[in-house]
Image 1 (cartoon, helix red, strand yellow):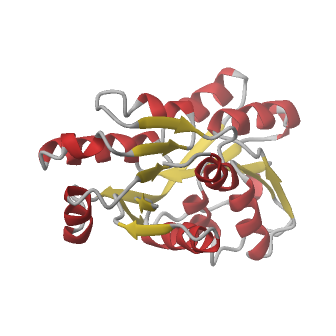
Image 2 (image 1 turned 60 degrees about the vertical axis):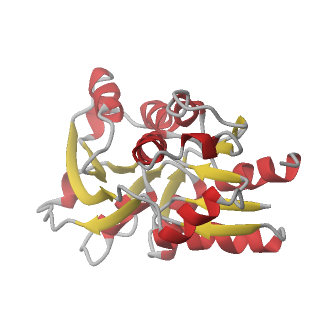
Length: 237
């Protein structure tokens, strides 16, 4: 079995290490490249909490004067663990997706306690910000990174697809799912998708691959990497 990993390179390498433990082969061809954006936030003190819907947004907290006791609401456990490693003492994980994070923040925080700082990427969905504002919160959005699209697959991966050496692909975001489908169409690899099982982090990701024919589309029970790896263990492909 061999899995195509499409996350940014550092993220893919971490997943690859877990696949090795399961004796599962892999190839890496990132569809996104993370680039930090210089965006100075002048006054952290006025915020009651910071929200991160992606681990990559945590780069906005590096080398800042923000107090370590600040409440930082994180989309998942990997993000909160990273925040703790940065030295912050009050990381709260939604252990889910952006919707779960928004619900948790609305449940735990009060609009009267001050504004919320939302650190995100250039292409982040506005639903988190919109839902918080509809609940009465003042939200300041700061774009701290850009996930640039890579509109191709590596030559090694294209060759492996044509030889039918790849059995499945991991997809972690709707955007990366859309990019992959577009790349497959542009490279005329649609027939190759017929032999692939797509492992999706969520139903939102799965919805973006419906315009191609796959061997199967499987969705993690919870949106985290543990459940993604469990999907591979559940089925023989």
